[in-house]
Image (cartoon, rainbow, N blue to C red; front, side, top):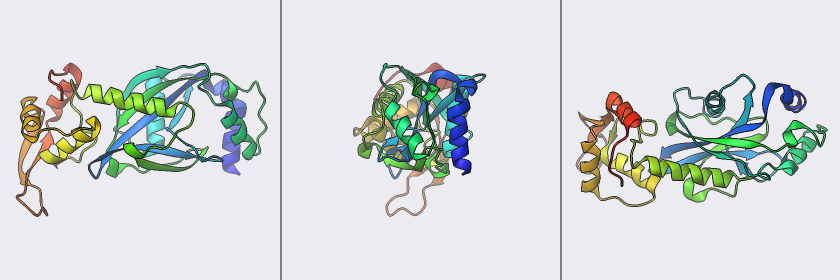
Length: 257
């Protein structure tokens, strides 16, 4: 009953709490078993999946709203977060979805209710450490789990478009900014870093060229340790030089993959 009261409160009082017709949708990327994955919600009362999202409080900054959504879905506080696009097609909001969901919850919703109006959403993508995420559902979902990028189902509304735009933006970013600090463990091997880049770009990279270019950027520290428990010659471990990594994030670098 507490869940119903929570949803009912949002339906009834949301217009006074949230910015009208504005929402945020978050594409949460993680890296696991040499594969890029995205965190999706399984919606209640339907077979559809969707991206984690939410509304913006009237006294809340957009970035703060996106950060709040991410923390609620992952349990993480230190998150790489980037706004990448705005989606505002007039018919992108799905009135039928909300009407059906509220009916299933036993809540009567007026046709002029704020939830049924046009919504413009601001897209954010986040890079998170897969191993530290504790996926959590929201009021209108029954599951929250990771999907391989090659196995993403058809999503609700325009969420496939939002996901594809986020991936495209990340692929562009990787050509002039570093990626990896938020996706890899603190210590990693050069092959593991290369696998991450290949998973993002969806293509194979030459091993020697990759190592040469990534070392030129000066964002890595080679450690004296080697990876344990491998069958062949153990590769050296690396970590990111956080100061130089952040400088490269701010100033960018030239190159491309």
